[in-house]
Length: 407
Image 1 (tube, one colour):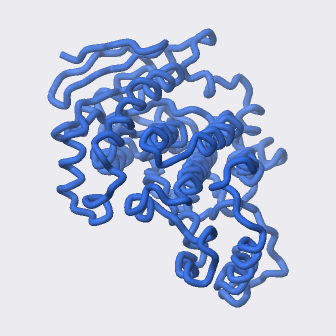
Image 2: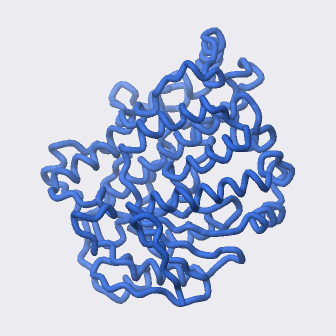
Image 3: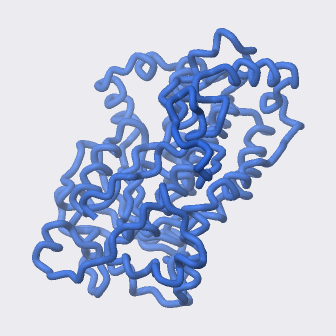
């Protein structure tokens, strides 16, 4: 039998992959493709191509946001430790629930520009403090000066991707499944700080940035946490045999245990106050069909206005939905500005002006970096005089979805 425990104000459903589930009675539950096939549905409006078209007040008068919503218009996040099987489960959930899958955000979103050029190739030409530093670099040398910058950038790309996911959901009505989210990113910060990879000042700066930005997002409807004990995590890391992981001085037993402790003692407690939470023992993998069955039984509409859960998604008027949709689909650059919290008191976050100038001079001569994406004739862009940029983002927009098949 599945057991139910409580953490904070939320309900956590702990399920073994081979067991039955707790039953819920509700009218608005997520449906799998198999369930959808049994029920006749009224056709929804075609998805709004938010990549190419703006959505403003005039559009909101005739294109109502909630007309595209159905029971699967939800945000689901899959969480868990390294090598737990999150990506495989998230992909399968997206397929079975007819949702859009968003892989875990990574540094490629920053270092590879919209024309496919990898700016990490420039490292030999630029000052050391301006060079790229991604997950591979961290795992090889976790005590590097750029570790704090790396983790703050990790939060930034997750924040950027989450905005894209919300834009997709609100513009198309299609739900999204994400592999991790900005809400859980602090788990890595705590592990880095305890291991001595990040200074107290850098940790403080990270939380300043997080506090200033995370409030701009809508919390997920559901978090699925895969629980894998540390010894099994280390075994899984060895099995997948990635050189920078297997021989990493960063992924120690203490570091991984710190991540697990923060996940369970803080993150799960906090997120369960706002979202539904399913926790599975995934030590030996699990059955995706069981997870689908559990998700289908959750009634997301059972909460009233006094409940903290789902409060971000209880907007009363269509005008409010239109404003939120416009914010995520068309004003991402303003949301990204919330990440700009200067902390000049943290040495590892400060780069000398001369180094920045040298970096920008090299970057200006890089393919696809001189002009805004879509306005570079040298890269093959056409009709430049007749274009007006829809998105001016701090981070690349390559993760925005343009494939609406299956909606």
